[in-house]
Image (cartoon, rainbow, N blue to C red; front, side, top):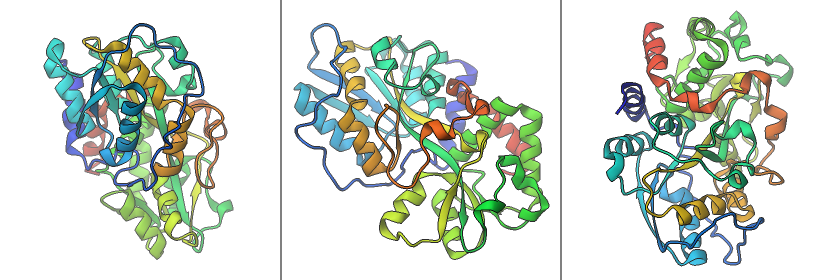
Length: 355
């Protein structure tokens, strides 16, 4: 295993698990039994009757879709659920002996790690083209299935929308002292810092971290704790992933918290996605699995049950959210594959004495 990939995966496995796109969300509705793909299959060759999936996505999130895929194809799926980083590490360690056909990761960094270790194959153009180029490997080695957006959520009783800066760097101003909530040990936050380093450079990323620290940001363990603090009015703004608030609003539509989207990497869109291993014994059914996860019914399922962003066109996210086209910015157009460099991010956080 290459050292950088190993460091990334070990480091990722030690954080709080915040990279899960919808964490412990438990979908309550099943997928319609008459689900059909909205586009013709691009799979060529006879379908195998079994598929081994290493899934960093929780069974609560994709279990219904797994069952539906088995019903539609007649294939038997063996799914190994686990931590995304640990599964990616297992793929690298197993090498040519890996039983996995497909890796369903909950963040782009892990997909980048196995791509850079040359463990995956080129995906068909017809699958790749279902997703905007920003949310798939530029080399065509992985494709995003769903997206999550970093947002600055704010308490509407404490902050007016017009007060919020358009850049994530605006929160380093003294007016935000003591009013910010963040979770430095959380995996999704650390992915954001990695993206900040990639988009803005090491110096600017360090400057931002030092500025937020100087503003006496309150430290929380995860995104849920930040949303709870926002609801109580303990902090005015918090750096989180978008779907936490959407989930809360399903139970309490009157919660006094709204999303703010910055015009830079502060509103990073990260993805959960899939890659087919170059040692896959069942490549045709693996390809069909990718098609299935990007069909209309599956994308609607993710939108309505896990509150994620669908990545295929024509399907809207649930809730009062901006579209992906509205929140895409020039500074956000980075190769998500490069979010595998957690090693340097952890060093930076330690250097600034945040973790």
